[in-house]
Length: 475
Image (cartoon, rainbow, N blue to C red; front, top):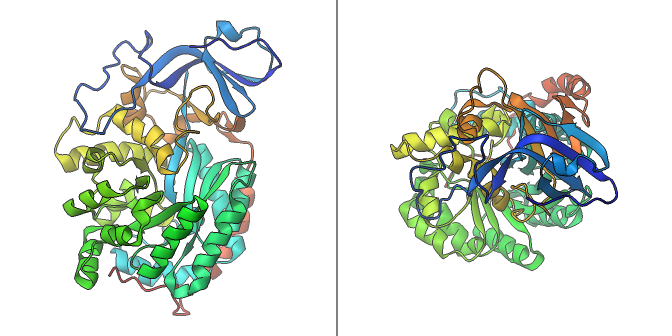
């Protein structure tokens, strides 16, 4: 622990909380802190997660200045103070792959196979989207994520200037990519690059950007290779869907002789920073291809959607064995129904145990590591967010663990992963600014957003025109 200096007023002081730490140890308030009794697979640590009781957090200029004791900051002047006795402070959650405007399509296409879901519902409806529909959807999504303890999200969609405007209004942090298909011609990639270069560093630095080719089955080899070159030239992350499910991988092999991951490798995309959504269709051979990549390769896993579509989970244990981080995600609310990363954390732990037939994998602390440090690395912000430590961005949440469903607390990690819910998040803070206090949103007006969005839904959801933005053909 460090002692906060006596100087000009701090921007924010939080006192009396238990703090989730990386690299620390459990404290007397967590006497049964069992660490992880089962040794993790190679490359799969629990991030040395511990819990520091009765602590205080000092925030200045948007950064964490110190984590100390309440006594050390008792006389420290502060613009704002939060009494967090009985609460747990932890890094804000990160939604590593979503399509925020798709909250407008929540629940409209259910209990369908993926090809029918795309071709008969989602892609016909998306031809109707206006820029205002996209902005309203993104605003509603941001409100949902703030209430669920998400402080950063990675989005891949259309009209991303409107999503950037929603991000700025909300106060959240985001990595944004303008999605494109090769069917758009050269203009698609050009728009993606233009967006990435114009919006990089927007919203007082809270917005980072990526190039966002949709997938190997909608973006051809030449465009994928051009994307890799532009990413290398401009230092940009690439955010793409690939190996989404086993049937998709099999179709690609039948059509091209290559898996989707081999196609990314051939295009040079594994030699730049790349965030790959889903990966439930990875093969054993893909692991060796991924291991040879020289870029910072990461995956995003969204387990609720996989359960709904009948897919296998992302193979976290195999990816851990080759040192590839996996962040948590929700995908869009049209398939996932919520943007609840807390739910994704719980489902990740449970589906991994089931798929591996091993109750010692994935442990609660490993799940928390995926939700914090691994998610931060996945979106290219591993040195800024994902942990509470001096010099890191003050992106944190305060969680109430006093409810009957979370008591008693024998082990904070187990309580967070298996018992707590997103509704237990009381306060959400980004860059030291409080976006939600005691469950009350401070930056967004949900009734106003919904009141404008709902009358637009009949025009948005009309499918009688017979158009689609694409045809789903996984090969």
